[in-house]
Image (cartoon, rainbow, N blue to C red; front, side):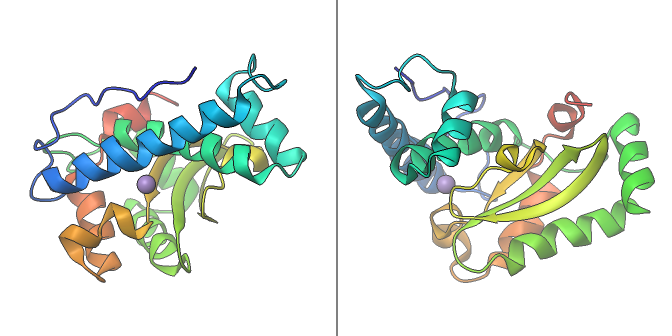
Length: 194
Ligand code: MN3
């Protein structure tokens, strides 16, 4: 049985960048619902004994949309919560900064690419920084899709479903992405994957 992970910060700790009300609903209701659905769907099936990543890959290859969407959203949100911290953003650690400069040309170029990928994801989805073939890449995915099914290892993910920003930013997804990037990202956590 999968369980809702506790956050490393209180639900009010990211306010006003991400409000307590948003976290109450997003973590306490949306994420919890994916887990409840996943547990119900895999019960008494061959999926029951697999790890979360194995469930994502198997359900993707079998086109089992119900299990895939809920399993992948569970994984995606687990990463998303870890990618944020109170008073985040700011100066990035040098090892990560050097890798970003190497693979994107400059930190500013990477920032622009990451934010633009989130803005240009039509409808619900995610934007990501992942490792693919030893290289850092920025991608976006629709709905629940996780880059691990495309042989990438995500190390930073931003939820661009409306439930992630609508209470705080209304229709202004670009403002949400900019604030997420500049004030919430836990760069030490992201760097820990290198
Ligand atoms: Mn979400």
